[in-house]
Image (tube, rainbow, N blue to C red; front, side):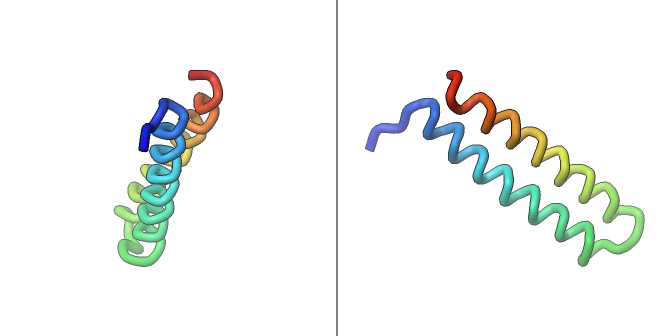
Length: 60
């Protein structure tokens, strides 16, 4: 199976979304103190990077 740049960006977007969701859920349920805010902020950052990967998918 040959993977081109768009396939790699698609997989990277999917992985980033999954990791972002996991980080936000960790921040919400596992760490309910101040550390939870950090986990949630990093999870939102992962969503932003996944958004950029998705925007680049058709242009590379």
